[in-house]
Image (cartoon, rainbow, N blue to C red; front, side):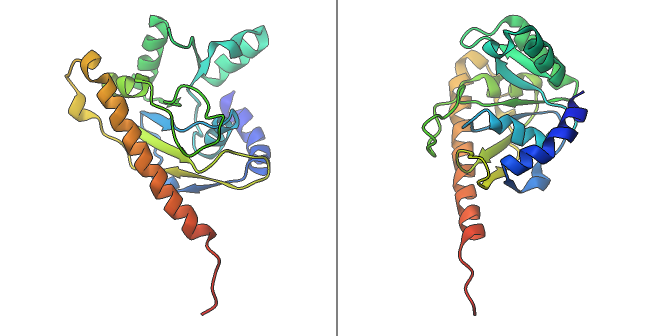
Length: 208
């Protein structure tokens, strides 16, 4: 179902949210946590249409599942219902099971949207790093340049995979905050790289 809907929706998403992907070759289909900054609901649509071709496993707030149809539809698309602040044990198990089956899980580590539309990211929740460590999978970082607006070009960069193997075997309760801060810094570095790339792409061309 996901592939069918994606095929139909992609042309419309590309029209409404034109997005240039930088370093697209770095996005592989191996099992991983896919981390991205978060401005708007459309972020999921862009990432799905541009990068996640086979399936979409994304954490979604429980409020989106209230309706019978929306619950059925989101579940069919691969969304995982999460109660903010107190995710159930079953949710943790489902995420780890999907990772171990070779899937990718899209997570917005800030935990909520950046409604201010600023470059600054909020502190990261610990979930993304903890899941990556427990499943022993890498993190594929993504970064949007700015808040998406209809019919205005945006840029999305794919960063180098983030290896958290140095934390394997450690007590996650003791290191989860350190892991979140480490991941935040890596994403900040990617944001700076993206700013430089966009500056190059949008610089006025001079006649030599």
